Length: 113
Image (tube, rainbow, N blue to C red; front, top):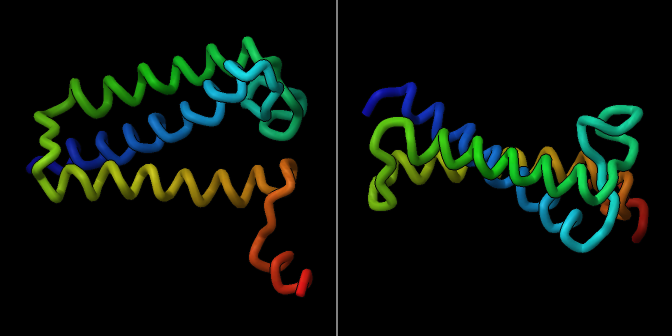
């Protein structure tokens, strides 16, 4: 296994997971934070921008996972690399966007008791 393939699968997982909130928010007609908002990542972008950004993330994720190397669902190395990318961006997004969308950071949860 080439380490470049694992790195590609990791970032493929990042892009695939990042596609979900943008694409779904856009399809629901809801604005959501994106890199194109003012301020970037904090302001809201339109639902159309989010559909486009979500689809772009999906396409890049596909290219990184299925067009680099020979991704195998039965390979633990391939799945772990992809899964770590999904998990990592999931945690980062939960912490970053939680403060804008009603999610709690660990410090907030302790204070609510």
